[in-house]
Length: 242
Image (tube, rainbow, N blue to C red; front, side, top):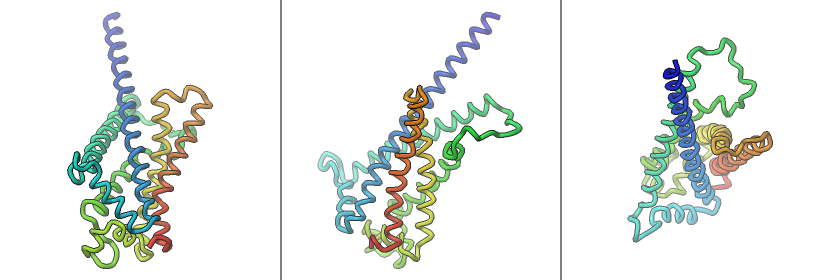
C-alpha cells in the first residue's frame, strides 16, 4: 500500500510540475504576443501621419539591420519567433484543457459562471476567432495583399501599403470595418483575461489587492491595444485618414 501511495504522490507531483510548466509557457508566449501587438499598433497609428510616413515605416521594417541582415530579415525573424510562440501557446492551451477535462470527466448538472468573467468564459472560442482573423489579416495585408476596394489587384494599390490600408476601410467597405472591429473586441477580451492569467501564473496575485490590480492591468492592456488598432479603420471609414 505504501508503494502504491508513494507512486501516486510522485505521479501527482510530476503532473503538478508539468501543469505549472505549461502555464508558464502560455504566460511567456502570451507576453511575446502582447509586445508584438503593441509595436504593431504603433506602426498602424503611423497612418495618422500620412502616406509618406506610413510607407517609410513599412519600408524601414524591411531594411532594418542592413547590411548585417538581408532585406526583410527582421520580418522573417519576427515571423519565426511568432510562429514558435503560437505553436507553444496553442499547444499549452490544448494540453491544459485536456487535463482539466480529464480531472472532471462528467460536467456539472448546473454550470455556474457567477465567479468567472465574460473574458474568461470566451477565452477558448475567442482564441479560435482570433486565429481565423490572423490568417485573413496575413492574406489581406502581407501574403496575397488582397485589395477589397475598387481597382481590384491594381499594382499601384497592392504595392503601396498606405493605399491598400485606406482602400480597405472606405465607406463602401463597411463590412471590412465591422470584421476588424469584431476581431478587436475578441482581442480585448483575450488580452484582458490573458494578462490577468499571466500575472497570476508569475505569482503576483497573492492578495486581494494584487488581484484587483492585475484585473485593472488586464483592462488597460486590452483597451490600449484593441482601442489603438480600432482607431485606423474607424477614422478611415469616416474620412479622417484618406
